[in-house]
Image (tube, rainbow, N blue to C red; front, side, top):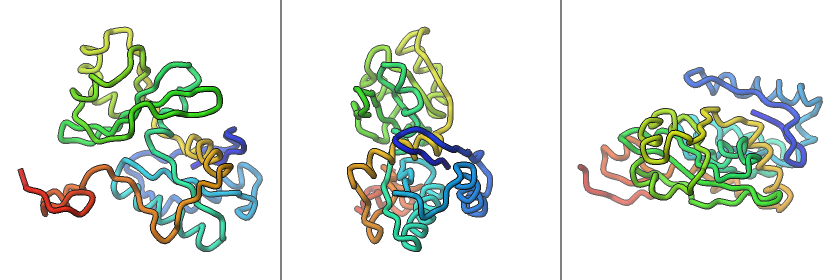
Length: 220
């Protein structure tokens, strides 16, 4: 949870994995506003991480952000969770590959690079097997995220012992900073239709044989 102005983070709070996000989210929003000495009506937009990531976490975050926007009239913008994860290391002037563990020997991953003041996506966010991804990562890329920690040894085998790793979680301040550019462009989401980007079906959907787009697929 964070607040930013012109991509500069003014306040930032994080929530550990496993805590009760739904109960803690609204008090944290109130706290981060107080830390920045701002009222809700001073905000030009609300940015939310749209995925990929935890299905439950994404639903809670999106529902909370939409509720705030519907109640206040403040526009909503969405930001890739992987872009937010990469954002904190883009100042090192190298490509950054952000990874989140998707289990079943898959990861969510995207590759980003900063050119001037713009964040460019070099490899679109996807759910992919780690071995397939490793052939797509640019040389000297920085590897970030919890997914990189899970597959640390396999990445080293492919990319070499000099590979730089950072295992920081995606911060709300990064989401807010990236959201500033979306707000400036008036790239607002449609509140009635916007949904998280899961990138793959949930376990329950896979069990029923339905993919993330609602298309029936074969089990196994």
